[in-house]
Length: 74
Image (cartoon, rainbow, N blue to C red; front, side, top):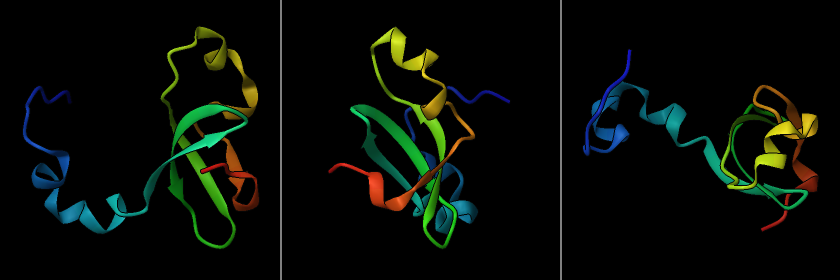
């Protein structure tokens, strides 16, 4: 399902708000990513936020890949 709206997703998906609070934007190896905290010491890549097409071919930052916490840049 696709929703086209200007309403924030937190308002549309209010029941999922606790899980949305575990989503972060980070830089990993210079690539901006949206990651989801998985508990313990790992994050799962949800989205690549880069404008560089080469970053989408980088297999180490593909959606679904698990990343350790200690390698993030702020």
